Image 1 (cartoon, rainbow, N blue to C red):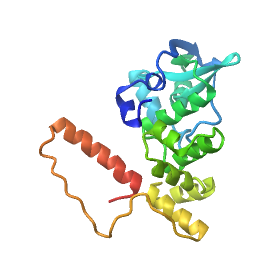
Image 2: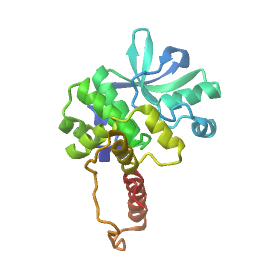
Image 3: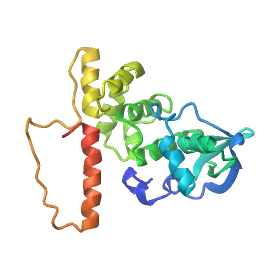
Image 4: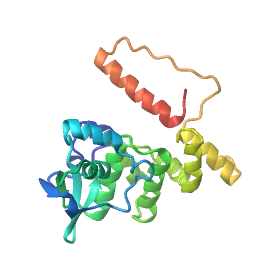
Length: 233
């Protein structure tokens, strides 16, 4: 199974098992959303996609699976919602014959590839896979390319209720691991392990001169994502 780091260069369905998909175009009226999708926040806000899809069309088809006489979305609900707002009658899709459990893993990995889930949403998804699908922390780690320790930590963050996370977001704070851990500590009235403990004022210096300009830009983008995820400055 491909790790999360490989998803940038691989089609998700290929990464999850090879020839189990069929590309076609279907009517929007034949598509239904998935109530168990990992994303909780921001799925209704598709204004950015509407403008992009008006200008460029749909760059990447959504992923669906057959469910009775309809097709249920596995990945790409925001693209589907944007298509409805634009007024499209049909949309390109990739149909997968993967199992329900496999489809949930694909949906989670697709959102992670796009970095469109906050740590709490990832934690909820991890909790679902561990409790409802009986997967171990190691198995979930392989799906996302995370260490077992990080999987367990995100799962603990998911103990926060949605209202508390919404209030944190409304206060203007980023939903970073650091901020969510701090909130969890306050809610439960106890301390907890942090994912990446560091000494106050500790700094790391890296020499990027050996990298090409392209690799340097790629590295800085990934570094920016990591800093945001861990609440670093």
